[in-house]
Length: 531
Image (tube, rainbow, N blue to C red; front, side, top):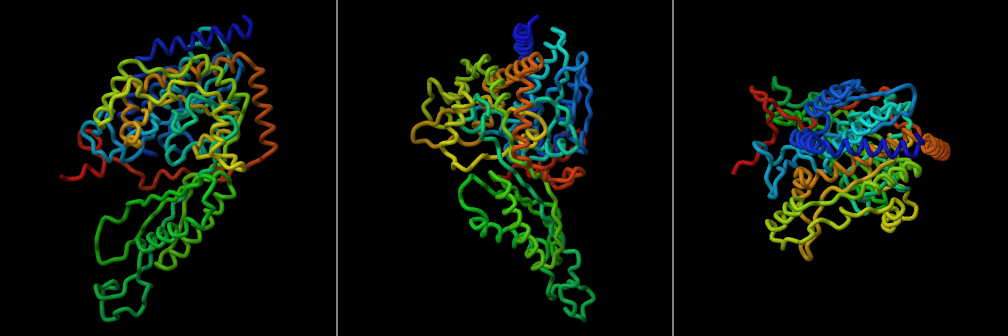
């Protein structure tokens, strides 16, 4: 059979498998969506993937690259053939618990402050799983040789895993990578990225420890047997260091970088060690900073300022300072060959379409928000394709001419190991009503859990991945061209890794977590506020 006809036949087989298994895929998605475990704490979600992949015949390493909630799976047929990789994400976002309903309500028995899927990564993972299993089925039916790799990537919300998998060699020897994300920003809806890839992302935790409070004032209250008596001058302590770091960095934010290029700085205060009020200085305080920049030079300058602020804050508060990297990612490399090959498959599948049940759910949401229900409530772009080239043109209208990268996502690390395409399929989003402003955040979260609204995303993305994989498995010329482009771009702009090969993922920090009750149920904190 000629390569073209073999690709066509195998695509049809792979995509038919997805059509026939949509009920299962939908149920799988709802399971991961309901688990909604946050970064580095996706215990049940990761185990579910491991168990399912093993049942499907994959060889699976659980806890890959020293990450307890990561995995690496592989399946091969025949001798030789290309090695293709895609991946799952499954971490949720703390404080965004939403039911699959048309009103703002948490999932049964949970606090509104429990985690929920916002992007949703639940659909990201099940979409790529659909493409993976559809391709595996078609390879078996048509006797197509090759290897499928599938990695479980935890903690994307802190961009925690892909840099670690890359450093440990899990992407070595891969011929092509397909990276998917549900659409979240126009014009990147039902398209592939062309030239403007995501930029750098740095994230670091600063730890202040007041480990020798007794040396703050050696002659304080010499008649007291208690060094930290109520009337003595006490060391400022770790909380003071943290607040000095926090306020100085906030005050200096405008001076860190010029206010263009779409850079941003976020902070999060960890809660361990601060639950007791006593006549003692706070022993430990930790703050995480994360910053997104279009260039490494900009990211490094922010790092210099933050490091300096932390050093002085620790000195002022009589603390020692340590710091730990969470992520340090390079900007992404584009690959036009793969982007076009994937978009050709997306074009063949078509954009998601929303049926009567999806429209009815959207109209109920609008009605409950006091908006006149629309005949076509979803954004027009959700049901339309836009070519990578046209999306690039529209995106560049909002960026400075010098700016090569925009926003951030840790798929960028993959682009330095193998030719990679990044693509988007629409997640359901509603049209804004004139004069009403933006919808509340719970609306998109809910639409990501309602089967009738999110299943079209899963089906289209899965079929697009399966079709692209079949093209790459049966057309060596496409892979060769993608590799040639990858080699050229790497030689033209080499970017060495930014962390050491033995870098350890920071899973031990006080990330949002849950406790288990005696019957095994999860309890998220904080609970709902008391009335």
